[in-house]
Length: 297
Image (cartoon, rainbow, N blue to C red; front, top):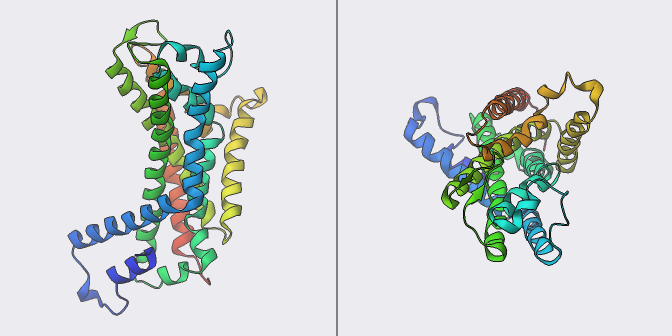
């Protein structure tokens, strides 16, 4: 069932105010619509191809290190540790895909969320349903957040599997010089994934807002990516050091702080606060735009 059919079935336009469903029915309907949206997102061929590309990077890293070694230093963060523990393949892949590939994947989903519906002409039908705009926007953003976590865990999980196959596991050395058990290392990797997913979810909120401004999903995707890349470029300009703490991307590298003993929470907390601020501001901007938008397609 498509999102249009789902929403129409849940809120027939002929229903009066006395026919408003109970809170339980509304929540059930919301989750059904979310499941429908996730099914559409995860079964689109371009999204599957994008996820396959994300998963290919840790495999490429692991095979390259296995054949040619680490090259005596240099390269991405954690790459020197790969040969000692396969857990570091996933962490290295996250560091490699952090500047472009993962933000691009999130921009693709978020930029297509509203603009894609408008482009194919289904948005008008979705918005003919009473009280549908806010619910549709929350469902769209929830699917973006879930996709952000899935994409991040896919990269780390693929790296973990190929790393264990090629290099094995065992105790995990931390950046502080101590070692923790393999199980504790898995927990640290999961924490890193959740932290990065929060940052990518904020990118998704930006993309969702831009998606409400246009009927061209490609334009929304490109604009979201350019904004993310622009933040990374601004990071390299010393004259803008006053701006760096307010940039969303400034705190993404703090995921490495989960590999310290004890975990250094200062930058992680600031990163989460920054991500939350971006997410709230841009989601509210998307809501303000979307709930007053005159839809013609």
